[in-house]
Length: 560
Image 1 (cartoon, rainbow, N blue to C red):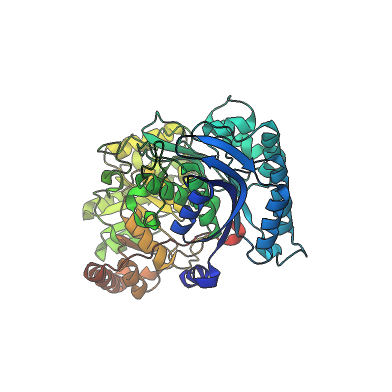
Image 2 (image 1 turned 90 degrees about the vertical axis):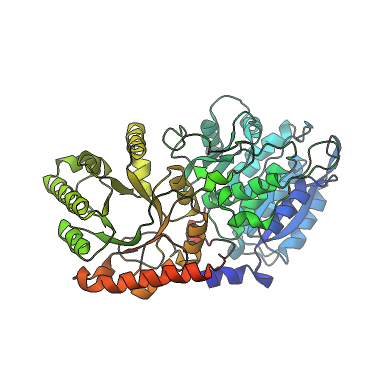
């Protein structure tokens, strides 16, 4: 997967993004900001002028939409030679220009004899509805708003309004931010991310994400700076660039959040007003920029508040401080109390009991056999002084005195508010929590819950369970290990000791073995222990640099 994706990012294979937006004579926003973001995200940007503004850092003195024929000619020229993976919009200038763009989107998506366009080049559409300048100048009248609703929202893959722009598009200030996002999706947008840059009262920069794969508050400490010109353009362009690189919209929003926060940190003072933000490629390897994602709109169990340290330095180092949990190391996953005892005798230090009971979780307490198995496993692990994680059946595990549980993302989302509060209280009392993750948004959601470890998988293809994910590979495992605020455990397809050694050499804090334990763990585990020690020694000796970008973990057919 790494080789395939890296090939696409080099030379003639650079992903192409069209930005159909305004030309800001002050160089702060519009196509100038879009170009900086595209360069930071390593994609090729085709800047298409839809409007020209006379402005500086203080005031907009004139706005002129380009003639529809001029916009059409630019798009036709590009379609003949540089078809886009993604089209991103900014200031469009007129309802007529919206209609021109909508016709081109349809041609590109449906295939057309007009040019070298076909269904192989069916672009996503990212809409940044630029309706007003940060200086206060209005860029949209009612005709343009109506054109957005009629022609662009039904074609949109993602729309990225701020709070006031969402209200303008809906024609009402009523409703919460999540309700407004749902209303925008009802108008046709596949995904919505309502950004929180215009809500300066919060110490957190809160963006509401409502996408096919994830829903929740995406948040980081707010960067307090008067220089924020081009923030919305940067966010939408970085999101478009990430989608052009193959990420689904939820993962692209994570990367856009990181890129925009870094751009705000690097903003410069130019002129007498708000200076421009400065996107830079180093955002993708800075653990302080990994956002958190709440489980739902309430954030009741997803956030204890601000990270330690000053809330005004943008992304305090403490935001990314790894948990103090003991690294899991070699991690055995077994399905019976007999197997628990077998791996304990073989000297394992971390074990998980994973029993996929036929009964629904709601009836787990009524399963006497399950209760007996979990209780016996807890007792055996406690006697051996080994940490035992109970998979899935967390409530029963707590009742029986377990001090560690593991939950998958679906299990997390199925928790009620009361259950989340109970689990959080147990964590504060010392419960160790492990969480699965397979994508960037799942990593962010796991990070919000301050777990003892985050599992990254599947590292290699696995038949243990059916799942839509690409294998993460050692590339993504190394990125997870660098970026996660908790120890990272490799899981999935680790069938031979050499694979475990390679996983340990990425910096992972643990590696899971399931089928590789064989019938007699006492016979197989010595080789696994040796492999783990060799891999961790190799990492400590070399600490090879992590490749800059992670790779998409969902196939293009699911990249909505």
